[in-house]
Image 1 (spheres, helix red, strand yellow):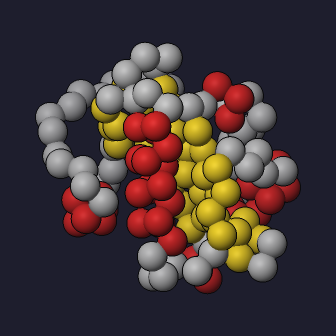
Image 2 (image 1 turned 30 degrees about the horizontal axis):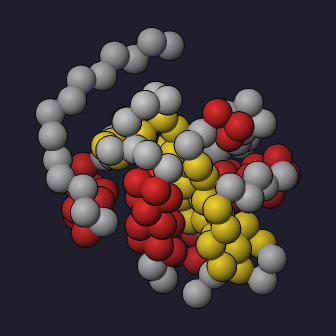
Length: 128
């Protein structure tokens, strides 16, 4: 199993490599402005390489938000995402969050339910 690191602040190159593989996109967001504001973020490392990531944003109070959960395609189906989400949940609780929110596409419902989330009504506006 990969080693989980709490708040590892991966290099932009490491995040970009993982992000492009996991999300099939040409460029990762600039996390240098995002991660310092997060409640926590976690990286999964295998042989020193970043193979999984999750970010927990927050409102500065009791609400935290699980974002950007991803695992490199070569490392999927090994329980890494589950480990990341469960550890992120633990750390968020430990750091004072009382609610952990997550948005996900329908095909991920069983994954997030298995991680302890229940579905709820929510609203969304696309701004850009």
